Every structure is written in structure tokens, then in C-alpha cells.
Image 1: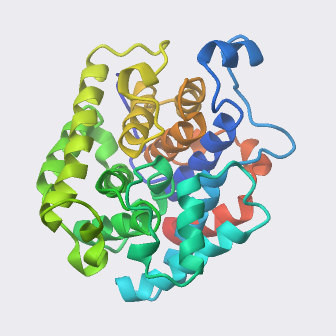
Image 2: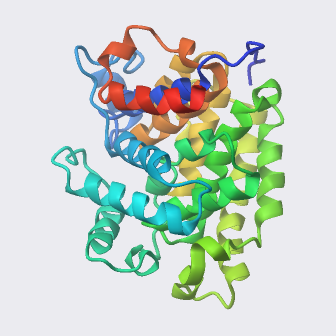
Length: 343
């Protein structure tokens, strides 16, 4: 892993994170479902390297991240399940029913949103067996929240995931994703080498923490004997892939398909690990990080989306080509969100 450098003062890290998420999403949108050899044939010699002009379209990953972020701004604070459930529900239903929801969205998200629209309690609407990456590719705004405790952030990250993905691994992976972004915003980028170990320590500390006030009876939809057993299963799967990430970083190969090291990313824990792996391969080069994720055999748009969010949180908005700002879809909405948290 390359040695990292940081600016002493924060430089629009929320904007860097949110736009990085969108840039990665747009860059990887056209390479999803392709093998690396096919990507290189379509985009010689090394894969896509620039955003489409005049408009780079994103996928449901960015759309749902915007939904989460805008729900957080609408919700009354301090955040509780009573103040946040309705804004999240409304935002998810609005996304699901929007004519712009035509970017090959995940079935889990759409089915759960259909159930939410029918008025079912969220813990009955969620798809209890799904741990797809749709729960953590949208959680970045939670990691940007400036005035929450670590446990509040964890509960919010898991709750926004639980509205659609009821599997404990989906909850834990979303929590870890928000943790990474908060860690980078707070200065954890000064010790990127230690980031995987911090994640593992955090996972162990949370392994049997079930946020009852937020998650309520969700665990009862599983076969687990208790809420603690339910959530521990998710953390254990995440711990397994974090160990794989540590091993991959010991002898990193920046030319190899990252999915071979930490997974294809269709499921939540692998999306976290592989998106993070791509970022840590190029900690000082945000564009190379999302290019590496986009040129992969897995869920390329979600992997690049996560890699971009991590890189932008670490390096700030200036890490991205200035011309991309005018090209990206939803630029105004991304800007409004970023201004709230960079302020």
C-alpha cells in the first residue's frame, strides 16, 4: 500500500465523498456484468478513464445515497426511529416510483419499497434474507453526520439498511462503511495502514450489540435464538472478509482484478472490502482508485461508488478532476447535501 499524505485542514471532505461516490458509480456503470477482458476490449488500453460528456449518468447507487442524505436533512433531530423512519420511508418510496428509477435497480430494494408503500411496518416490509450491497452503497451520508456519537451513527447506519435488507450482514456492512467514512473525515487517513485493524477491533466491539430501540423485532424474522445471536452472525461474516482484506494488503497487486482478493461485491460484506481495497491500493490517487474498481469482474459500479466515497472523504473535493463537476448527473442535489456537512 502506498504511503499517504493529507492536507492539515479539511478541504470539502463531504463534497469529495459524495461526488466521489457519484463519479465512481458513473464510471463503473457501463462495466458492470462484464469480465475484465471484455472491459479492456471495450475501453482500450486500460479501461474507462473519463466521465461521459456532456452528462455522466449514475445508477441507483447514487440515487439511493441521495435519498438517505436528503432524509437525514429533513428528519427532526436528535435522530430517533420515530423522527427518521418516515423521512426514509418517503424518500425510498419516492425513489422507487420515480421515472428516473430505470438504472437496473436491485430487486431487493424495489420489493421492499413496494411493501413500504403498502403501509407495512418496516420490519415486515424488509427482505429479511437479503444481504445485497444495496444497503451499504447508499450509507455514506450517515458517515458524514457531524454531531452524532459512534453508537448513534451505528444505529442509524443499520436502520437505513434494515428498511430494505434485513439480513444481519447487510446491517453490519452498512455500519462498517459509515465507520470508514467517519474515520477518514476525523483524521483516520493519517494512519491508513492501521485502518483494517481498526475495523476489525470495531467489529469485535459491536459483535453482540443489537440496537433494540431502532431495530425492534427484526431479529425475530430470522432463525436466531436471540437478538445477540442474530447480529453476531452478520459481524462474523464481515470479520471474515476483513481478514481477507488484511491478507490482500500484505502483497497488493494493483494490476490484478481486485475481486479475486476480496470478492465480487454483489453481497454487502464483499462490496465493503473490495471497495475499500481499491481505495487503499491508491490512497493518494482518487481517480486511479475508482478506475481500479470499475475495471473489475464484479459489481463494478457499486465497488467504484464505495471506493470513490472513501477516496473523496480522505482527500477532499480537489482530488477529482474539476471538469467532472459539470458533467455529473444530480450535481445540484449533491452540492446541496455536501454544503450542509462541509459547513
